[in-house]
Length: 483
Image (cartoon, rainbow, N blue to C red; front, side, top):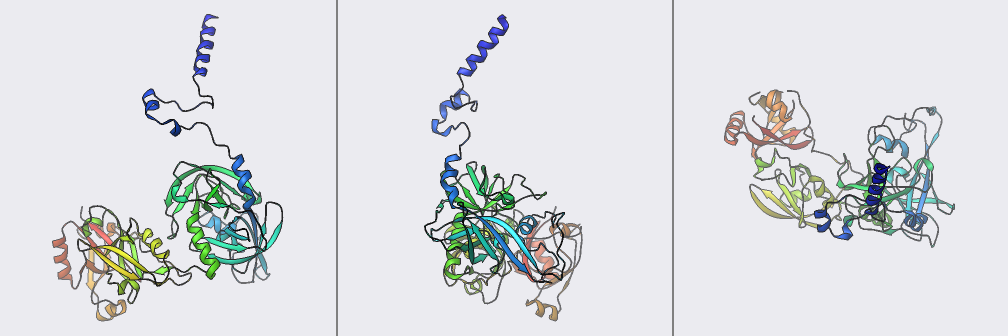
């Protein structure tokens, strides 16, 4: 009895020490003394008031699009669900759904989400939800009214689309500032996963400015908010009820949510929206260079003490970059005064500018900083974006290269004065990423003219250097380091 009484008394004593809100984090006295009271948050947020305030501006989107016989052998090609899952290699088509007969016209059907950004009926969603400008889009409001929507424009590079319904005095979302959002903050999504309209899910921001494969214009917000097919195009809200992102993609190996989802920052989406409304398409600046990330292995070869900037692998003749005096081997460190740490940051800085506008670039060339100014061309609409950052993988000591000089015909076809063709590789050359058929054009920015001269350059360079090579139609720098 005495023992039980002692335990009960101890439990009551501990309970009396707990905060009124519930069981909070245990802090040491030193930590508690040095932490502002406002910074210590206990308990979980209540999203009820937020949802009640913002959900009226969230809509359900359904899409129907006719597919003519022979358009595609896959009956699900272009379907929003199919595209949503295919982005991360989820096996498709869906099991159990019968394919259409190839001789019979068929209709693609899909669902998604969106949100109203102006009271006269402009709705923001994903490009992969709408699919095509010819699609029949129906927008269903929270009050159950349905409207046939007109596709205003689609931008596949950012996965943003705008549709318009004929209605007035509609409820709208409040646009927030994704730059002020912090990793670890709570966020909520509202959408129609698997057709369940106005479903609310919540989580935290896991990371910001996330770079995804083949996505060069969007610094994604990563969250752990549950997102599933049908959530695409819906809003991501902060705790103040402001939209900070457009839910767009998930990472999944099963087709379902696995704790990683990505949203397009709302400032990116709204810039696209304004251009789609005004012009029906997005106009982007074009510099005319092929670039790659600066790696730790390449940096010393260019005299940099740390890997930063966008490394120019190739300059297109007659382009804005060529007119500005840019050369292969230049490293872009700043664009309009803003630091460039990775190549995709330069792509976004260029893409955000209008054709004909001027951009100031700070570059690193031959161990010195220089400034250039370029007047941008226009990026062709829906041009295929070429990625030269992949240095590839090659088979398997010494330098490990079998080389021969280009003949005059080969040099003319490549548009170069000279170079060395890689005919066989092994050892360190293989580990560096060189491939049969590569053409070595320069070593540490010194043009390669002959085998003997190449050997002299290698001896002078020491244990680490950078090779500029031509691979197919693209040029890229490959770091080479002797063990």
